[in-house]
Image (cartoon, rainbow, N blue to C red; front, side, top):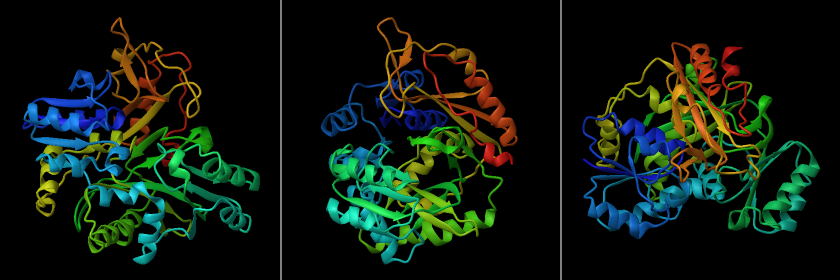
Amino acid sequence: MDILVIGGGGREHAICWSLSKSPRADKIYCAPGNAGIAQIAECVPIGVFEFDKQAAFAKEKQVGLVVIGPDDPLAAGIVDHLEGEGLRVFGPRKNAAEIEGSKAFMKDLLQKYNIPTAAYRKFTEYEEALAYLREQPIPVVIKADGLAAGKGVTVAYSREEAEQALQDMMVSRVFGEAGSQVVIEEFLAGQEMSILAFVDGETVLPMPAAQDHKPVFDGDKGPNTGGMGTYSPLPHIDSAIIEQSIETIIKPTAKAMVSEGRPFRGVLFAGLMISPDGTPKTVEFNARFGDPETQVVLPRLKSDLLDIFEAAIEGRLGEMNIEWSEEAAVCVVLASAGYPGSYKNGLPIEGLEEAGQDGLIFHAGTAFDEGGRVVTSGGRVLGVVGRGAGIAEARAAAYEAAGKIAFEGKQNRSDIAAKALV
């Protein structure tokens, strides 16, 4: 069948790459795609919010499956719209995608069903939020309720930083409407972990655990980003803790969504914190593949991704036996100078072909210039993935490949996956 993937980042490149390995996948289209995706799919100049154009294109090309990558169109109801046009779509409907679209909804859901998470309060009035904030211990976490491209969360280590973050969200509206409501929650110390799962109602098939690195600089310093690198598996985290996370958090959440009349179908992504005593708690839920977690999880998938997508859509996920490689994968993100603040686009990228001999290169923010050269077109530019028998081998491969790529102002963390080697 022909397939249409919606999105244009590193996650969508990884999805297209994984789907392209299916013997049942014929032509793959990607809207809008990027310079890397163009090597394996036909990129179509349709934006992620142009639902009518997407539907018309999919029907014209007789596409058998539409796969939704990013969070924003899911929250805006893209699945409901395309299904209403008679298309088969992989991704949660709008009422289920709210688990990511509203942090207040997510926290209220977890509280109602006694699913482990940090203590919190939600606010729509700035003065009330500020008064509460001033009573809280430091560090404290402040979250814009809505979607903010992965940047709407501040972990404040001083009162000044906390109050500034609150003012930015609620008064200055740096995240627009996303900051009209905020969630203030207790700071959870410990080890972060991400578990993505294929979900079809109450059926949950977890993927291997991964760990992201959100802050922009080494040693988890600097502002939060969409993710500067990730790795899988997590040899330093006990498998019993991973299993406990699935049984006490992910499965009960899927069941809770069914109970609420919002059955989830797609990829449910749990961002977790493991406390020093080994107890997992929920930091966040996302309603889609993570970015850059997907770039290390899908390269470990041995089963056919297209088969899994179809099984989820048809309510047959419980019949699937998904196989994963024992191989490790490490992804190092190469970002533009200035990211996650302002940055320049259109800078030529050198060394991609040479680097591709050592690792998998997933394009996140790239485009072609008028001369056909690959240039930068985003804050996160490339995800360079190394694979190997263990984390050390995969990490060495990723950094070796990353070192062969050059563009003006290239920045990346040098400590991705180092925690797994201690």
